[in-house]
Length: 380
Image 1: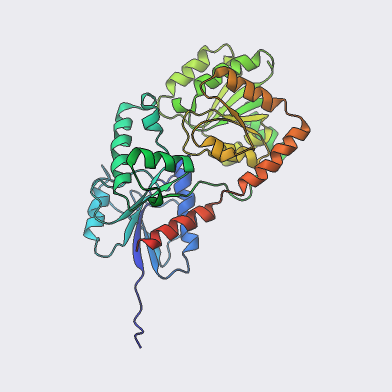
Image 2: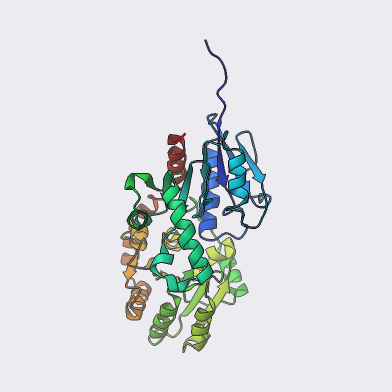
């Protein structure tokens, strides 16, 4: 009888997207997926994970253990295209697969790999990206997707896009969407008041949460807010999120707006501040032109708020029947959708709340990570 132990198959992970303290968007996705993969594979002796980083791991990442360790590699410049492929090449005999929860993999990857795609908004709206970033997104996403054994998409819409644009077989593109923590952070009414006072926010207000950048369609939201103010002059517009690509033009539009005194940009907010903002908001709006997914609408549902979202790309998929859909190209449609949300009756809110509970059940980090681990295992 052969009693020799079978060595675990090493899998490398590009952990840089997750290794960020102030996380937004793709950082949140990578961080939560890594945490859940580590949790689910603690008792799996067949798999061993090596998380590759440019800098030491932040304390919030899972602790190192047998079968889960971190390795900082260099050089830093062009890390993805120099340091990473060099390390993979030197260790290709022992590495079974490389996984990245982001768009980018090495152009010349010496081992099989699984790549991820958030969205292809840079192809739909190229004018809303800086030229150097646009070139990088176009080139790197193309060769990452085309060379991957499997591709992870964060929504059915993104999967459809990937298959159409890059000609991938639908069987090779899996869907592993983002999710929320099972229990939302609760903030007492007293603490809510204190946090809003700290942020210099007065109620009532409508809330946008996300990166301040053109594809979020914020210039039209500002114009829609101007229309809304003609009938509801007491309402404010609060935008919570750090500045992204080409944010300057959005700030300029706000400064030139007739409603400028009622528009507030908060920048990055803490989780506690964000919870207080949701809990005190009259309405949450995400009129984005192109979204691979949409965490803020899910967060709104979790806090019992009916989200107003664009009727395009992945957003109808995210909210189902639990949100109000608007035409993101029409200022009037956005204004009308927000007005409808502000005037819902108690019965209408209860109906939306029931639909929200069902919609939220569709998304969990546990299920998404399990799908990814199953996909990785199938390739070894």
